[in-house]
Each structure stands twice: as structure tokens, then as C-alpha cells.
Image (cartoon, rainbow, N blue to C red; front, side):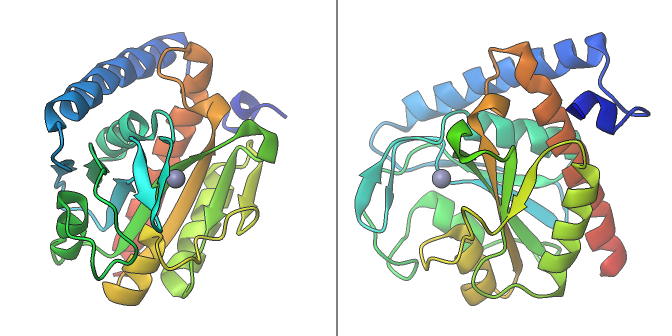
Length: 232
Ligand SMILES: [Zn+2]
């Protein structure tokens, strides 16, 4: 079954794909400007939409992870801006992460500060990453070190909304290491946390063939937001 067959009622038609792709390219340009303007400052883009779900993208640029410099998870910054806009949920996207850090306690850049200062209506942080296509799944949900009822609910909704895609849970990536945003949310912020690794084939704003993945993810996140609000 292809992703298009999965959702016959809401499958994206030609016009939707063009709209999503052109908006994604605009947001990709905006992200690149923010990254270029960031210079040596580790800035972050924040949009507060008073939602229960807050989408984050920590790896849209080169970044430190547990003391080591890593390459960007390509286009996760613009994908997160796009999904936040479509699903009408808040976003915090790192536009620079050059300062080395080992633990969340010592990390004090704009991205980390925005997460520590999330408004009261925030209930769950959903952290968007990129994985290689060779891992297999289209999406991998990582439930982190302390999954509870909110994580179970979000996994159930995402698996059902993304039924036409291969969705893995906690393998190959479980988001349990101490340095993940999911770990920060669950262990330090008192919030739900979930990681979504997106395969490279669904991450190019320059290839219209990636639009169905971005569209499906955005719709699925809309449903998670609705269910979390109902659960509040
Ligand atoms: Zn990542």
C-alpha cells in the first residue's frame, strides 16, 4: 500500500502538493536566512500558537551532541516550521548550535532557554529529527526514558494517522539517552516527550515527491494536538 492509498478521504491532490512544497521552500529560505544571520550566536526561532504540543528541531544545523560535533539532520528545521504552521502548534527550532555542551544542566543557549520557559498550556514536546533511509522505516517514534500515558496516546494516534507508512517504535531510535530533548521534557520539565525520526526520502523541500510525507506528518500532528487537548 502506498501512502496515498492510506488516506483516500484526505489524500493530497496535485494542488495541495504544490501548495505544501512551495510553502516548505519559503520556510526553508527563512530557516537559511536565520541560520546565516545567527553568526556565532546560537539563536532559535520560536512560534507560540498556544498549543498543547510543542514541536522542536534541535538538529537543523551542525550541532553538538554529548560533546561531539555532528552534521545537520537535513531540512528538519524547515519541516518543523511547516508542520507547526499546518497543524497550528507551537515550534522551537534551533538556528545555530555551535556551543559545546554535555548535559542539559549546563546547556544555556536560546533553544534550551525557550524549552525551559514553555507556557503553561504546553503538555508534550515532540522532537523532530532526521534518519537515513537505510534504516528502513519512514518514521521512527522514540518514547524516551520515562514514557507514560501521554506518550502512549501520541504513539497510538500517530500509528493510526500514519497507517500507510512504515512507522517503527523505539527501534532503531528510542530517545532514551540523557541528551535528547525527549529526555529533557520527561525528566526535567515535567512534560510528555516524544521523538520522531523522519527518513531522508520525506525531507526534501526541493522534491515534490517528499510532500506526501510532510503532509501526512502535519495531519497526524494535528490529530495528536486534538487528542491531547481532549485529554487535558
Ligand atoms: Zn538528530
